[in-house]
Image 1 (tube, helix red, strand yellow):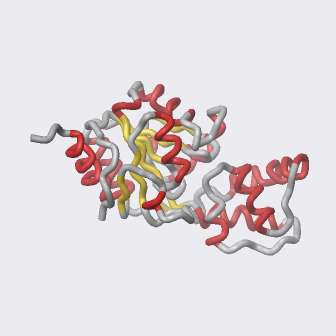
Image 2 (image 1 turned 180 degrees about the horizontal axis):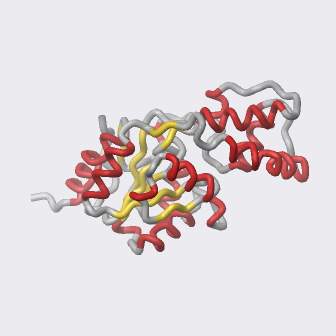
Image 3 (image 1 turned 120 degrees about the vertical axis):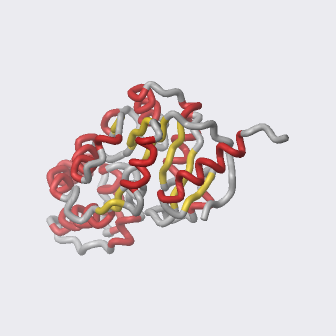
Amino acid sequence: MNVGVGRPLRSPKAILFDLDGTLVDSAPDLAAAVNELLAGRDLPPLRLEQVKAMIGGGVRKLVERAFAASGTPLLGSALEEAIRVMAPIYRRHLTGLTKLMPGVREVLTHFHLSGIAMGVVTNKPQLAAREILLHFGLTEYLGAIVGGDAVTYLKPAPDALLLALDQLQVEPRDTLMVGDSSADVAAARAAGIPVILLRGSYTQIPVEELGADLVCDSLLDLPSAMQRLQDAALPQA
């Protein structure tokens, strides 16, 4: 079910997708990486639901939040060292437990055949994002893959979205953002792009309260949701 119709949408030339919680369910792999890091400090593991609440700000924020949740917050050089230790652990936990979200391949195929350019914008490191997308055979659909280390400021800043659009050679006014978090909404708003959010991801705030133009139950609802936004843009008789 779709909820609410916000900003009207012209027929898009491009769609930008978030990765974690939108195209893939990576929380189990991220939880495994976090818990391996914590185990190295003789700290107890975190539950999957705890780690889900930490996803969205990149690896640095994930590490920072994990140690804070364990009752041993890190600052300065101690945090930098933990991030350095996390790097190889993180790379070992990219695709072992990660799964595609429902409808991903069908929806990307639909838009590809419709001639719509597509890209991924994520706070995940660029090489990690590309490895995951290659693992699932999705790179053939994508004209741009922009990770958090490819830009100066992570989402909720618009930098990654604007870089992806530059690579796709599409203007913001001809684009749609699809994500699952407040950071996706804020980044899209800052870039001047309409945004649709998906339910059932990692946000701890009800998705209807995040300010998207439309909310969908899953990616399979995206084509009809886009049509509703396009219909709202048509002149009324």
